[in-house]
Image (cartoon, rainbow, N blue to C red; front, side, top):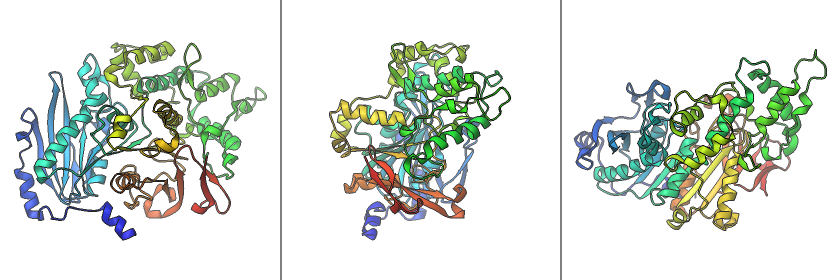
Length: 528
């Protein structure tokens, strides 16, 4: 069975494409501009496996100065105009050992950073992989200022352009069309994947959308709301990061860690944690390791949802446990950069807008504007389902940038909008909650399951432990993933060996401890 499964997942075309020498010469003689004459050729080069590519033109803010390539590839980069005021930088990596599969990679936040690490990861397994700068370079939103065309590239046009161009180029290069197309993205990339399913249901056969930044206008508002709540870091009642990660986090674990039957530093289901910060109020003026009444109010607001003027839910609250990493941005006593740029350069087109003045009315202004249809909150994905598409979403239980409760909310919203109970929805859309995972990766839980390059090291390309392999198996073999098994390495270091594995359940099932050693897979089961 295993050998048969490997044959399915690693299947290559019956005829070997070209010998290495011929592949190199074919690569260097390829003329992509013949197919897109309005584009500008930036790069065409043969790159053997093991090469450490450098990107001198990449914005330093992307923090990707180099990338080791893991397969022999033909690398093509084009600048493609999308309007008279905008263009995208597009790359496709064409592996010599192509499986016939096409794959698009996403971006993050509001950035224009190609995830070269994911391109290397996926070409290693024979995907012809694309990436783009989303219409602007770097992590700043300044390029959006008074240029809605760039906002449109960011919202949806850049990703769709990479699909159109990428599929045409691989057909011209290999002499045959792709067999199946896939998408892999997290955070802002998760939003891109779901919006692709909504707007262009035929672009991808299978989509993996991690920690998706959907309901984008309200997400941006929720993130913006933290700075007025915490206040600047130099104010008297500001809660220092050590207090969050030590005092408050310890109290959250004291109140909620045992709810799943195991005290292990992980809250299996944060929705069951009804944290009461009042227990931390100082008993006397000389007390230490405690909070003032004003600080307790701050803590309560941090975990509460964002509500509108009529008490309507705008966005769910931060999940208990996420504070460990949220101190770096949401709780740092400074503006959340993505939200600050979005309101300054897009919503208000006012470069001097003060993020401390944010209030709930700003959220409704952004939502009414919905610049370039960036919202990404579909009540139905019927066309995508009708095309036979398959969608896997996942979200960490300690996500410090996008609360996982919102993805649960989206699942239920889609279920209601499509009149589909979970049994029907699960025929094409499955959502997995990942206890103890931070934003996209990292954390005390078993967070490595092949969802990106960082989480693929040391993980085999097998659908039981690799979510990209799982979507391939679902699309091509009709076998949907019942669970996703995550791996935790000792000190998050592959070389130190595996610490344990944990089976993550599809929503609305919950991973529940039965008995036995907590680190054993057999000690847990999935129940509603």
